Length: 114
Length: 110
Image (cartoon, rainbow over all chains, first blue to last red; front, side):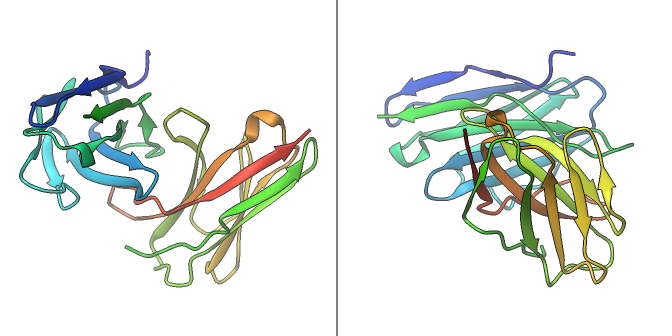
């Protein structure tokens, strides 16, 4: 398996623009997570899905952020409108619900909002 | 979510054992103890996890105190590739989310 695949790897956008980050989880994994990492706040859990259903979105910073999982093999995190303080590395992770519930992380998307 | 406390940083010499401590005094009886590490410019990766008994795998060993209020991740022979931030995380049974703290930055000296 290729692991968790995120795209793009790097994104530079202007303040006010819409940004969409994409994630393909590992096939067969039931849980999917979006994290954000900054120097100031470390790794923050934004939202997680079980079987394509959002279970906990308490970490989503504000209404500008939204996440969807239309099927088991794809998820998006959208920021609209983007602001400079959204600059961070965004990680997607997936995990099976059986066996060892180990979370597998993607390589991340480095977002810069100028 | 129960919290963990780890030292901010540690140093080790190459090829020597490393003991990374974690305190979790508010752990509940059904919380699992997980360790992840994050190498530079990469996403976190799973290292090991346990509930009550000590655990060994190809990467490391996990020693859990009898009262479960603390645990220690043991790298038996540190290599330069082990330089990373190591996170100790408690996961409640039946949930699948991981809340990361600040972790311990391990520096390995050649």
